[in-house]
Image (cartoon, rainbow, N blue to C red; front, side, top):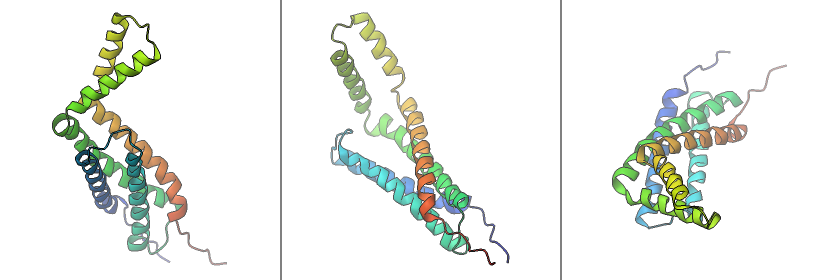
Length: 175
């Protein structure tokens, strides 16, 4: 019995593009709808990610793997899809913070200042300035893009590890 050894990377690239576009569209809808970044509706992005990864795994299983997929293959399909989606989302993140909504960086720094002052109302002006200067270094569009990419890859990896349990379909060995 010959096993289909088609690489998971090309199908994952296309699924990653679709998933990345879905995440970008969702982000734009949140921006257009003026939804606060801390709103619970933003958690829907996790469901979009999970749904896209599950679709990628099942799609690869049914189209390219003859209806059977090991746990490792399912994880691979999810991981690569998540990686490609994260790359596309990172590119969007940079343009979002640099061009579409540049005021959000200032809003993040303002919220950080409020948080610092709420946690330590007796902080000296020098210490506050140091803390805000450190925050400003890590909230440039480039740094936010890097952190977003890392977070998305970690999330996609964790979700892929879990979803692969449900997407796999092992061959029954003939006795």
